[in-house]
Image 1 (tube, rainbow, N blue to C red):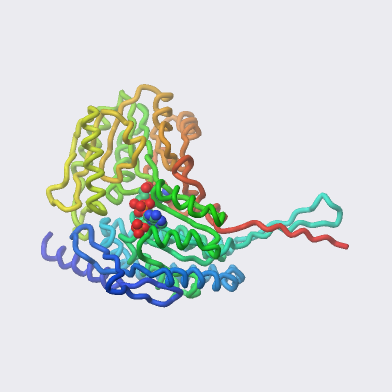
Image 2: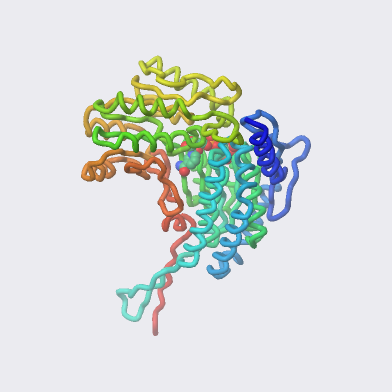
Length: 493
Ligand code: NAP
């Protein structure tokens, strides 16, 4: 970096650091960390401590739950146009603070600054979208088969919800849930990932400033197992919306069973990406690159295994390897960086293990394959060719590694794509419209991209099937996760 770039990076970091608040938010009240009950949050690029948040005691978590329950009647009865206006004010504040929020997100998550800015815009897109959905919210009227009887169908807010989110999208996974919840009239207690709580806390402060009632949005931080048990056991919490790994999702479902909570489960994936022999090679390579290397490959929808028709295999691998070799790796604030560090050393060890096992099964590392020379949590962007796909059907790598496998025909490609317990996202590249539609219909996944590697925005119904979970976020369906249907039969006498 030259002097001007270094000064720019320092200025952005300072902007991000200025938004760090070392507290939880319990019904609008800032709760600081006690000396003996705190969680350190670090910067994955520098491996230095950014700050601490409290490991909240049970009484503070319970206070947040009670406040959500107390705030619910008034908020759910607030006219929907007012709730929409509140969401729009929140969105305007997020727009005003975009650069600072993006810098904060880069600091705690490690994704490159421009990508983090993209996440803030994407996250804010959900707030703006659900403001519109809130205004359109309505029920139905139907004639009853009984003479003189009319049936009103009301759509009512579910109640106070618990929201638990991961570190890989510290802003978007929160707004994708909360904007829908607030549009519906729900109140919420949010437990962000311990590795990225500061973005959540900053978003909460802006929401309260925009007029979301204090009890309607608490952010509780601390040991997840304990806080998770408190949230799931409480009869005051009527729903859990969880985004995270499949094993934790399973456990939370069990914990919610005694109180029969409504559930949304946005869980892990092992997305297949299939390239047919008639695909536009440039498009297929460019979209694979975009889909895979966002957030250093730490996204639930990024291609985990790429299948390329044998006729195109060598050309695809060569072109992809050339492009991957040119991806700049570095700190989020260095200009031009496309791949940042992984979130922690556990993540690095997993990626390393996947590369080792792939090689042992016969794969060749065409580019990359090792930890990056920068050390720390950086890993080389990697392309693997050949070997066994079993591991990549079973486990998400969550790192900058693309394993590519050849296939011979459409039936084989579909069978291998579907041969996984996961069913979140899938991608297919072909110029044959019949095949594109047939293949998309055959895929056992919730979200499919045809000739497209980026497939999420507020208009897309987002969610999985099989062990990737259930429920849909974003789109016109996302609000249904936070609504119950009530029928009222009116008899005219
Ligand atoms: P994770 O380990 O499942 O953690 C997710 C959240 O759950 C964090 O807030 C974590 O808190 C909390 N948690 C962990 N154990 C818990 C427990 N026993 N009780 C209550 N809460 C608990 O997942 P992650 O590593 O953060 O995120 C990566 C995973 O999320 C991947 O599997 C990815 O595919 C998935 N994901 C899915 C989607 C989707 O839309 N389907 C989107 C993004 C990510 P702590 O951080 O405090 O432990």
